[in-house]
Image (cartoon, rainbow, N blue to C red; front, side):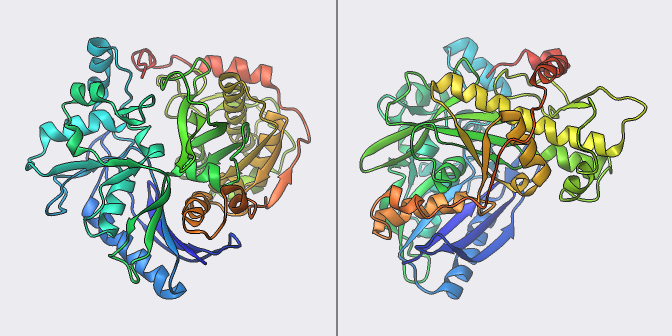
Length: 479
């Protein structure tokens, strides 16, 4: 029995087939980068996304044959507004990175004591209602909602708890849309999708050959959490891509608040199923792989991201050079949008290799910061870390992460574990696996890297304090 998984990320989308052994086959990929018509604006064409989803899905099915179910995993909080009767978007979709509603977030806090961030759906939906022409049939959705609508030929208007909970419009106590938040944003609840379980048969994907059932919806970071087998309290993964996202599974006890916690992490819905809602918390690094791209494209110190390992391994240490990866500010634990990248400890003897190693070690230090914050906020012990994402393939970085955290690092066998998570959830819903623990038992790390040295965390604390507050007006923002 096989599962088709559609994974819509920020820069591309893929479809692949996951076997009951956990093997991923017949991958079909298309680049789908968002557009930025002006600084801070991030948009994409939902109709083009629809066409690409159907192309890659059909191609994967043609190669693999029939499947038992479809799972969908997606970039979270990107917002689409369309006419439910015609299926035509009312205007460009707003990507989760879009910052055009920063002022609306500030006003929501000052006027309504409502904590919203511009990367959430809430203010994006409000902005669209005010700026796009629309009919009485208008509806909203995140990317999972849109893909399910497309695959079902317009029959489904749904989202799951993991996606709903990061919109800023969800009530964690009632597990439904917040009437107060919707009222403040001017959004009618009838425009919002039905909230369903992450794992469970939702409807038929009639737009695909064989009309397999859609049996899972899950946000990408939660998909990666499940895809790496983190379904018991304290199990933790970090995805190191363009940014870095740490997620810790916390269990079935709901958080007392949906707001940011003292250590700088956020409560999240890990997934939901017939047994209820399962929770986690999330820490965020605003720039991870972005720093490697900077070394390559802007500084031209390395030829490619892969070259960073070769160059950094030419020296055994950074020789006192410390880099704070704050190109876009600092996230968890001490949020500071006005912090900026900082390079300290340079001497006449500093070489290219020292700087490249310092960049990799700086990202590793930020990973350790997130682990510390998640332990503090969750009250759970994190004894080892599982990682995926592009940087998980860099041996120098993985060893630096083990050294910074003083924990064993388990490297995912696949770079994008989101696909596995969606497959596990869908497979359990249709009987491919009896239970989620059965499904995740197929996961085995490609490598286990133990600490081999100790990175200087005291020196790091000094360096990161110097990076803060560089742009005071941005440092003063708090979402």
